[in-house]
Length: 227
Image: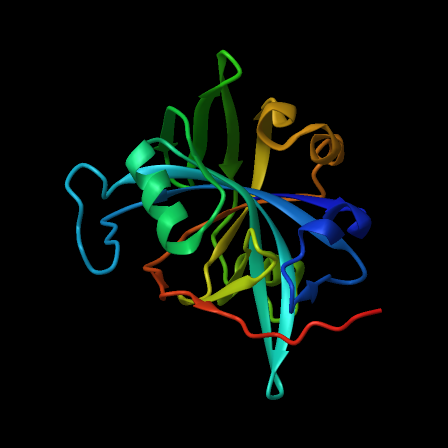
């Protein structure tokens, strides 16, 4: 998880209707997150040769209050997976912004050194980091908890609407990271405006991960107001 503090005005046009940008200690964040799906099922079905794969995503953070409940959530700007069928299913079910590129990953040692690579713009690109010290659960209210623990997701629709879906997983233990390398053409993936904001990360850490359940999405019915 490679995290950047950015100007909230950069993300304003991407915020799904019915939600608002979330922040932590006055800062708004974009995160580049690389991880592996293992033993994946889609709508309860295990698809042969499509159960274990890498993903790279760019996400930011929003919130929505529902009957006194504060739902802190993620919004994906772009998600990269290695197989076209995975991207097609994700676009069809969740209307998420998936693309397919060749990918690879490597996890070595304890604590691990993790490397994720993808092939785009005519070359291999990568993120890598070495985890240090024992992995610990982040403190409540900490920066690490804010980045790593969200139980909701929202997706902007082409017609201006919003999909909401629930995510279930326990809090993830976190390793601090060192020897961080970001060798990436973010202009190719995200465009020049966002790429210009992804220059110097404010934090990098490695998460242990866990079983995750992503529930079926539902469309929000939010009353729009006119100026």
